[in-house]
Length: 143
Length: 143
DNA sequence: GCAACCTTCATGATATATCATACATCTATT
DNA sequence: AATAGATGTATGATATATCATGAAGGTTGC
Image (cartoon, rainbow over all chains, first blue to last red; front, side, top):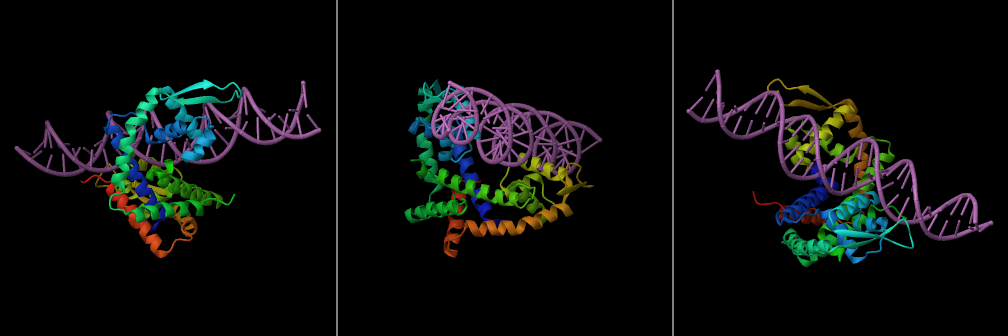
């Protein structure tokens, strides 16, 4: 039975949550995807990461991060300036427009989470995080 | 903190599991993606579904299913024949090659699940499914 | 039997994921 | 300082996700 497949249950929950969350952002008239939002948030919190480091934090490939950053630059949510000490990199900064969008998305994210977790106790929530982390570790090759 | 974001934890676990599972299939020299495998399995279990119905079961868009089916046909894992009573549809069947691949993937899937769930008790496992289902329902608009 | 509507499937556009690779630049070693 | 190796970024190819739409076929009501 497919429903016994762990992948299937996880995939089902995350996809529904993703659709729900994205729909609520869209409905608010905010032009950003969840993935772009994640990257933008990481850059806001730490603006001197490489693309690979950003990818580690948001669990994306460097190539995906590169393309998301390009979009965020094109749409004016990020600005870049050359770094004098390393010609390969640029200094990324969340622009005012980017900050405006982050501010607008924030309450929506909180509300999404609240609705998604309705009926789950604090202990359920903690256990869920713990189990997900355990699965993550189990699937992570020893390094 | 990003780690507080439900989406983030779910995304992290499912992505790592997906990479782990796909790597094990690749390592066995089997040329199929997890998503193709899911669709193939559903067709094996029920070969008279429309693309939309298949999509409902594997939690994919009809457009995604259409493209996955085209690939499965191109790679000889599925065969199609016209349905006399409805010119829009075709009868899909898992080919011998498709069955061979399903058989080869099966033990790998079981092993993936076993490893991913190491250290989780029966109750943990049941609770995980239950919590994921609850999140799914919470994110599903009343219909 | 025809018109209006619905279903099924295909496909274009855009975003993301993954792998591989190319290119530039930086660092370490000698 | 020159070179070898490591790092940072961009991009091509392929697969998938989502939305929108088009085209063909089916169904219903009249």
